[in-house]
Length: 66
Image 1 (cartoon, one colour):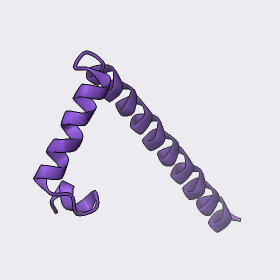
Image 2 (cartoon, one colour):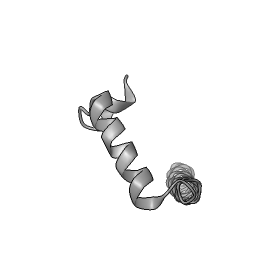
Image 3 (cartoon, helix red, strand yellow):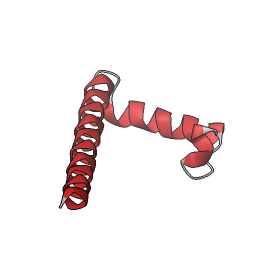
């Protein structure tokens, strides 16, 4: 599935305009910092969801044993 379609039907021209706006607004030097921060946030979110899934699975297995 095309990532741009997933975002909400954005075409390549809209994506290009948004990218140019981000470069102008934040500057080219800030973009790597922003991307790193977003990556860390996504990683923390994934870790938290894995932890919750593990707790649910452990609780379900304890219920089966009892």
